[in-house]
Image (tube, helix red, strand yellow):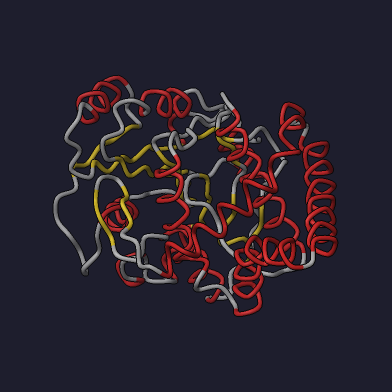
Length: 334
């Protein structure tokens, strides 16, 4: 990238009790193939009670482009991450803002690639991320992320706006300001979805960097309960999608009980529906794996559809029973 094409970039991270992962993230950010004097890393410490602050301060003392702010005041009724991001973006000097999370490890060409994937009309760009894989549970999560991002890519080509993922997201500062920022948007547990919709509604373009570079790597959920909490939070954004997309998601969640009922009363039809769905999903997944060269995922294709059906139905049940959502050791109502 030519020097004249190097705009100043602000990288923003909200952190809360991230001592186990924050060094991995910051090490990847200071190793970017982008001039250090052309980007800043702004960290908002959201009342961490572990060793996060001490670790971050060590980097602040070592790198001039890293700044950390202890966030204690609330603005406009915001809570948690939304509140932190609202305050950090006010301090951001960049033409573009890159949002990421403390549990992410970004490739060295992350900044350059995200800029190259955007255009002058792009207000918001969704990056490419995958969970690290170390067992079957994490592999199924990674496949789920891969499938979701492939679908987002297809929909973005059809100019159908859905969402962006806040752990790997580029936003043009001008586009962000046009929405009034997080303080004007109000509190949401899916602040990335909220910002995406606001920017698109202001007439800005959106795009997707899926499979255009190495993915950013995030930490997978370690337990079923933490996975459910993560997906319940994402579900809040999904409920604000256009009716046709919401209907498809609801039908997806109802497929498991439907297949079970068919199998009990009409075994041949039930088995046929189950096998046809599995075949179609598996073919689409195989194509996506080949396209992205994530060949290690091949051996899990057999199990993915059962995982997906079970998870979708479980989320629907928990939402209907108004299960409380735990996020960053804080409780929210859904």
